[in-house]
Amino acid sequence: MTHFLDIHTTAPTDLRNIIDRAQSMKQARAGRPKGMPDDNQPLAGHMVALIFEKPSTRTRVSFDVGVRQMGGQTMVLSGSDMQLGHGETIADTARVLSRYVDLIMIRTFEEATLLEMAEHATVPVINGLTNRTHPCQIMADVMTFEEHRGPIKGKKVVWSGDGNNVFASFAHAAKQFEFDLVFTGPEPLDPERSLDGLYTTVRNPDEAVEGADLVVTDTWVSMHDPQSARERRHNQLRGYQVNKELISKAKPDSLFMHCLPAHRDDEATSEVMDGPHSVIFDEAENRLHAQKAIMRWCLGL
Ligand code: CP
Ligand code: NVA
Image (cartoon, rainbow, N blue to C red; front, side, top):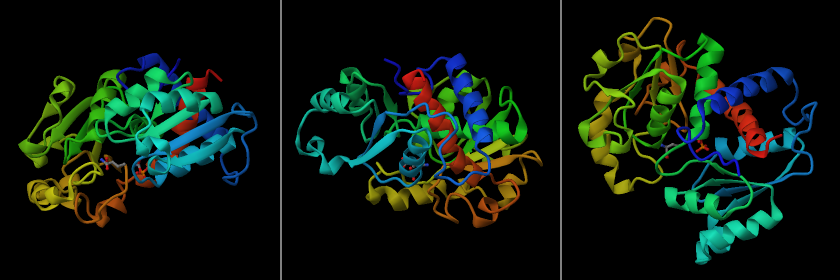
């Protein structure tokens, strides 16, 4: 079974093939209305379940549209509306869904839920974000970087802010795609220890971004963080805001990314988000193309 659970558990050659295919599939349908099918219909006859235990705009819409463009059908399920939310085990849910659908994408809280789904499903499972990682996002981010600047190998990527789930997938990608990753953020919000060795830490954001080819940030309060921590996190992270002054210390042609949704003028200013370095909406678009290639890889189509 070919699941897409994480970047570090997927072989570098497979990751590279997925990115390259995503790029060629994007080019092949350039300029078409969004609802027009792709010429080849690799998912014809296939049913895909999209399960959300957390809110989503990009993941939900990009997977749904992507499946339809490839000729498949989707059902979007909210965790709370399923028996999953009323105590049916993940394992039983996985076994049952595998009798109805050909592919499962799940966005959930605990990584254990994703892993249990993958263990018991007899169809491929895709990670649509957990508290720990967000691999589909970083596949789109690598694709976006390469679209604008060529190979990411050997480039310097600087993450400014919370050492969260999106950072973790960047750290996994740094190893697989061979780029240098620098984390700059407050010590209490350091990335989890399992990522040690995949990045370097520079506490001072001005020093960290020197020579950066790409500057990235994300929300200061993730969906799994308690709202009670909001004020403390804002106080800890304020000095790591990506603003015009900070980005001016990176390379002149550096790119700026944010997976979105953003809290404008908290983690990044609108001036940067809408400015010349920003590729945030290309990044959002590329979720669609990257995930289409991921689904084809999972299904061997
Ligand atoms: N970036 C991202 O995953 O966005 P959504 O939460 O809207 O899916
Ligand atoms: N770190 C954010 C990413 C949202 C796409 C969260 O987990 O809420």
